Image 1: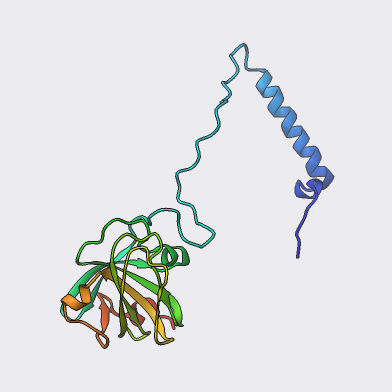
Image 2 (image 1 turned 90 degrees about the horizontal axis):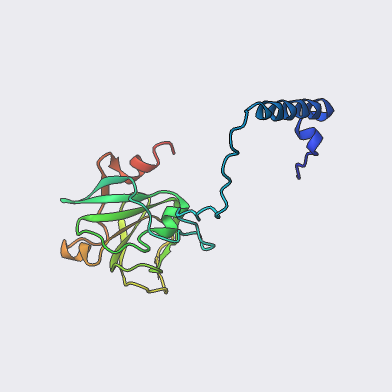
Length: 197
């Protein structure tokens, strides 16, 4: 449904239009009573282009994400300080354009529902390992991802709800693999992210 209003309807019909005219006349009259003060300078240069990040047509930002909200994750006796990607732009951007990731830092991608995921490394400069995790918080697969690899690593199963990215080899160095359970400081992954389901 299109919603278009004429200018008269927008300002409240003819009465609103007359009221608007009176307000304009009052403003002009007040401006004329200012004496001989000089007119304010008019800025002639073009406004500076915003430095704010932009979302590309592919759905990711055109630069690195700012530091996201973090949470401690636990896998067995091991702890990771983890940034949380919980919306589409965050999930689409992830580690893109970042230049480092500390050994005990990670990024957790939280999806609204389980699916067969695939992660690739467009605009990503840091070698990563990605754990594909089911809705219960159990690691199902771990894939190494190399900078610039656009092929993607597709999940072998269709019930992945979380992906945990770490420095490449993090899981191997700790002898962690499929079957390991990921928990948060608040409990299980579903208790933490989907309490109301």
